Image 1: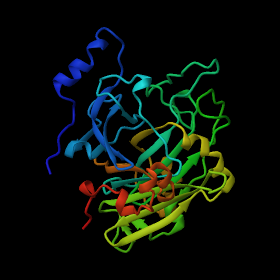
Image 2: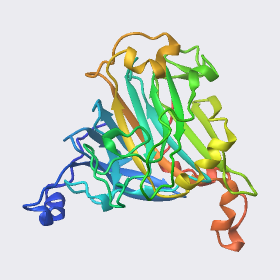
Image 3: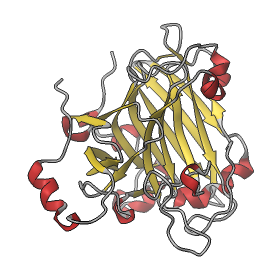
Image 4: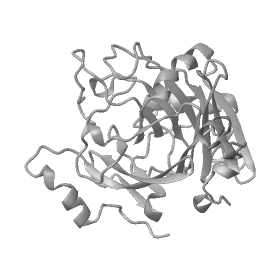
Length: 337
């Protein structure tokens, strides 16, 4: 399939950026990205501080990112060469299922391909919006860029393992936060099952080939608070299922953030073997991250209400149980050999 560097058309960017003339714009439009929400396909865009960090195929249904170090890429609304705070797109995850195809076949030991969410923007102690030191308006639970905020890492991964990690903070999203839980409540796939995923045919998921991740955020029927984060990996007829952060109190504390406006972030980073040992040291892999060859591809991104939540969203006459196949988008499902 033809791969194109997905810059907006010259006319589109020019017209969208006319108002930026003479301003201190920062960042670059990368490409479109298609995201399906409850069966509705929507076209957004991706922005980052570095030019040509991502490219896409099939009109944004699949995006590929190369190694960018500390440079993150963000889902945004308008395709402009700037990253104003009001252009970031927010998503709600509570009582939803996030799913996407992923190819980490070239993401080797000591590299980290991540798709995660943060409660961007963060705030200064005086209540003003915080810009941060590097990625515009970025904040996270490790104070990268000097601003704290809630974070949920759906995956931090390479072909040897991955983790899913929610991070809570000292106060609610939407205001000043003094600190967060840097380590978070993470679960490493290798520790769940050493043969759950790996670059070998002996594993349930052979990471030398693409596979699909479905991650759901279930709630307690009475309290409506988060009570489970479930992962389901599918590759052909093989599946690998496990839960993350088996701490009921921690999950409940994540409810407000996941119910609010969380911004989608992509990153591919990593340097030395010792620096990434917290992720893949348990697997015994060796060597530093090969930054020249590492790329990650995400495709067919969907955020769908969990089946038990769908009846309340539908007209009364249509409020029947909805299966996974009903809410999936059949036109863009990745077929895995």
